[in-house]
Length: 95
Image 1 (cartoon, rainbow, N blue to C red):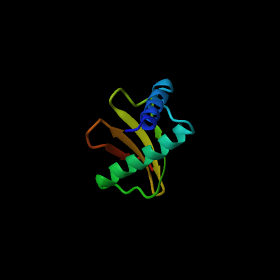
Image 2: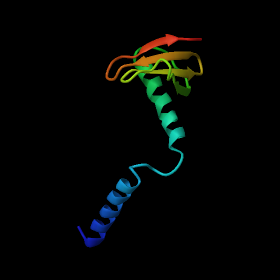
Image 3: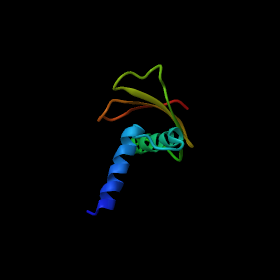
């Protein structure tokens, strides 16, 4: 590598350390978009219909460490999705 490439790599690493690995811009909206898509894909794999996922909201009252509960709103229905890591989700249709 040339000295210039080493300099660029060092700048990128320092930037990640200084800013805590955080990216600039609206990260919360992007995180919510990816969450709804991931939840919709998971319940589809389990045989539940979710047409056009619209939003996913974490249910803080029902969630616990290593156990997340989400309210997933799709075009055709609303579901409560309860998840343990690396396991199938428990899906309850709310409407």
